[in-house]
Length: 407
Image (cartoon, rainbow, N blue to C red; front, side):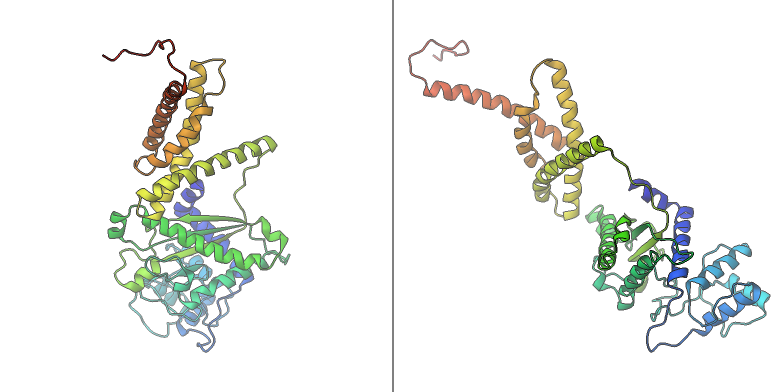
């Protein structure tokens, strides 16, 4: 997962993933249709399509609808002219199109990029990117609930599900989607991050997971066995990749509260385990869950924020197994030939871990203190056992060597 996130942080890699996604969209969805009752096309988009067709043989439908082929043609034109292929109609791109095509736009605008209705919805502000079928945006400030987004954004999931399902139809030149990568984002909120460190990263991951769950449900409803091979990945970027840097208005901040859905045709390989490795994996997973539940009982009482408590419990559970393995190796080396030294220690260690997890902010410290408490407890119970034996014994008896005469 970390490797995937690092690859997505690479802008070149991210652009290639978007290109793969648009290839699928262009074949399956064709173009974005306007909502019922809306105009059949935007005159600015129609001019753009005519101008692009004039300067090259793109063959775009001149219908005024900002389709995937239109965006791809615009980026290709920008690349051919030595401009950065952003897919946005800035002043330089517009001037070059006018010069080469000889067709003037319907109206002159001073905006840095052209904003047009897409899928029946207007883009909130001049600084927000043009809406895309693969980007769901407009979440409430701290929410991951899809229902807080506008209806036209919610409707995108149905189109994405259709694209995935249709890619398995066997149609010519349509490669099946093998991996779905869902990338969550938040708007910048330094005050919340200072009071609750890690919250923005957590929220971005939660938003991505919420979209993944909704999309997966729509696909599972089809009950097509081939779709069971789909791989799903959730990535959170926090506020590190804003769509509108330095957002000033709530509309611009809503543009940053978004989730991108990438449909890929080449999935990253899954690890292949033989029977022995699978058994080891199952044992490790079972041990992790055991200590995770124990640690969570403690961390949930220490941390106010649920995501902080969960993260700390996960870190403790991840570190416990290597710690115990190293401890066992040390004990065996010091007492060769003796039975497994963990038998008496482990029950006390688990009990102590629940308490130390509720007090110590460091996972390593919580584990170490629990081990020290377990060692002390094992020795303490031995002393108590001796005490109880003398309590129930018939007296008088010969004095034990460890007894001291109290005057």
